[in-house]
Structures are given as C-alpha cells and as structure tokens.
Image 1: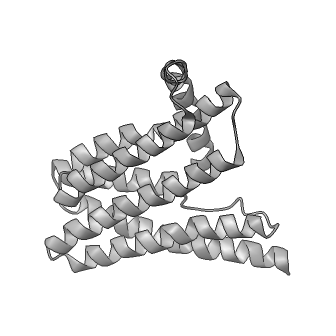
Image 2 (image 1 turned 60 degrees about the vertical axis):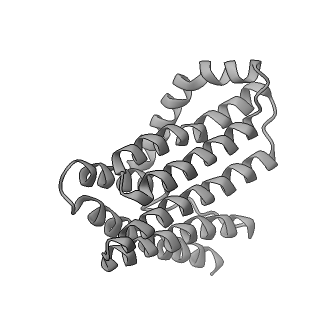
Length: 201
C-alpha cells in the first residue's frame, strides 16, 4: 500500500510541477542542473537548520528542495534527454542528500548529549545506504529486488513527521521516528538479502 501511495503521490506532484519544469527548460536550465541545485538546497537545510535543532524550518527547506527529485525526471522526459548518466546522477545525489540529513541529526543530538538517539541516527545512516546499495548491486548482478518495507520515501517522511512533532512540542517525536526508521531499515536490508538469496538458489 505504501508503494502504491508513494507512486500516486509522486505522479500527482510531477503534474503540479510540470509548468515550473517547462519554464525552467525554456530558460535553458537542464534537468541535471535542477538535480544538483536540489541537492545543494538539502545540504544547506541540513547544515543551517537540522544541525542546529531548527526542525520545522529544516523540514520546510528540505521538502521544497526534495521536490526537484520529482521535477528533474519529468523535465528530462519533456526534453527527450532521459539518459543513464542522468539516472546515475540522480541516485548519487539522493545518497548524498540522505547522508547530509542524518549526519546533521547525529551532530545535533551529539551536542545535546543524547547518545541513544545518536546511535539510532547512525543506524539510519548506515542501514539506509545499505538498503539502496543491496537493490542496486542485486539488479546489477541480474536479480530482481522489488521488495522493501522501508524505502527512501518512507524513511524521509517518517523522520520529517518526527521532526515536526519535536519542533512543535514533545521531545520524543524525532527520537521515536529515528528508532522506527532504524529498525525498519535493518529489516529491509535483510528482507532484500533473503529475497535475492532465494533467486540465487
């Protein structure tokens, strides 16, 4: 269900952003430039806001910049320049953006001396990267890996909701979200490994 809702939401968002994408194309802005600018915005939001505990503003900036992840693909299709390099660039920037977000949270909770939450964020950082790597490596080896309880969208949405809860009141919101994502990410790594091992057998 989560995947269906994610695909539906992404398609709806792409339609809303199509006019802006077409305007950028007319202005000579390439889809790859939009990808890079979006990632730069996420890095800025992580450093200037998330790493300083300003979670509502961090969620706003990162969400707005994250919309480029939808827009760049639709721009490439409209321009007729969909390429393997563009897909590689997009995936690479996603990993960098995710790393920046969770590194910023690690920094903030470390400055607060909240070591259990630091540990949860570390698990999110490492396991989240492994979730993506397992799928990419498996498909590169010729297997299918279209499974996963907690993928990128679920990770970011859960952490974003937790950040808003903490930003507007209860301190437990973001730590709880990080532990939830940590557990789900570790589970997804093993879920994908088992799925591929059955194909290999």
